[in-house]
Image (tube, rainbow, N blue to C red):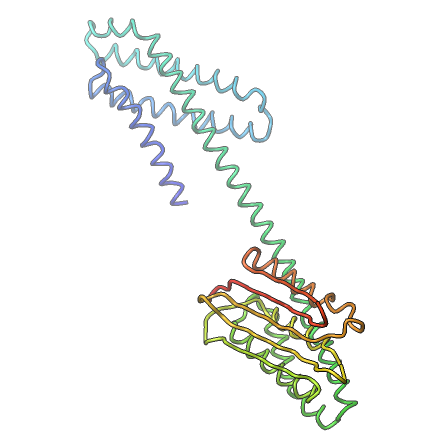
Length: 343
């Protein structure tokens, strides 16, 4: 509101200055007469804007007088010019010597057309400003609606995280119970703490990158214990203590997918390689690859988890990320780069 008032004052100061300079620089008008006539013209224009032109413009936007707007503007501007010329005639008669007054009478037609031209230009300026303001309001409203829709979509995607992650954990526990009940009980308590953290943090819009990395380290530790020596796991964590934030558990989706679809060969290596680093201050580089059996994992590139991650990346980072996923020659690879922001 304060900015609007300031803009209003500046606008009328500009109009006042233009009129005053136009009058004062002419030979016929003295300083006093120029000042008085400028006050009168500005007051008439203010009345014209507040009580006539503003309503006419409003009618234009609701299409009541849209096609006749220009004709109405010219007609009313002509009336305003006549009024201003008549007021000028009265001021000249009252304030000027008779000899100068009679000289100005010869220029009344010129003064009238000058007033008409200025009034039309004034109307056009105000109308153009209102068009600009209306367009900005529409753009702002549209942007708010788009942001609201995006927030709702992101919230919907976040609600899918916990059930999906829980489902994967239950599968792991089912496998462990069949393999070693004592080990399953030990890992169950660890999984429960991870799951508890996962459920609470997945509700947030952003989490600290260091928390995401810490979560992944625990997850790798548990999965390594579950897989034993049948799976080669190599990890590189080049993440300093930082204030960078990331959307919750988007990296863990790709890690889960790697463990879910890693190969189960008996005569050749099964592996998962992970490399995470931050460079240039806020650029996150995430790379993970795993061996996979092309015959047994025809749908390894698909799945709700990956689709969810892709949508969340698109909605949250737009052009500030790059994701490449490939599955070639028995190796499944994910390359992800994100420009992160700080809290």
